Image (cartoon, rainbow, N blue to C red; front, side, top):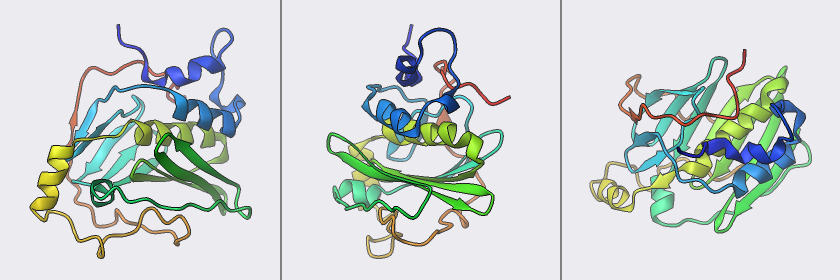
Length: 215
């Protein structure tokens, strides 16, 4: 029997079920990033990743996806050019927003920024040559950040396919691409022009999730 991908949260349990909102963000982030897993159930051009069971990839192209839960849309951007060139970036935390934390695991580095916007929170997670943005309510911050980290941490790039895509010039040049790794830039809606066509592949064999779909 396969291990659950979200076994990262089992260490947070003593008995029965623990509400994910009772765990601090720092603990949640550190535990998720240090967990070891290699499962995936969603495939796109040049990469694959694990999509938590409560989420659905609704719109996708070669490097952008809109992933939906019951309440929110997660905007995923994967920069294959940066991955191919092994681009390194420097991140800076901010003490003027709700939450800002540098994240790293081995040679993978990134940042989590959470900014309050009116009555909602804008979550930006940059990690593993990819970025997730989502707006959510405060009560759902822990679940949203965990979902984003699970997606980004599980991304596995397929080198041969990435090289083939780039050689075919199917992606814009590095100069023309949005720099998704600069967390100091203003908010961008980089999925506004994505085609409303789903072309991804999902396996029917999902692993059980510790995080349950919100009721």
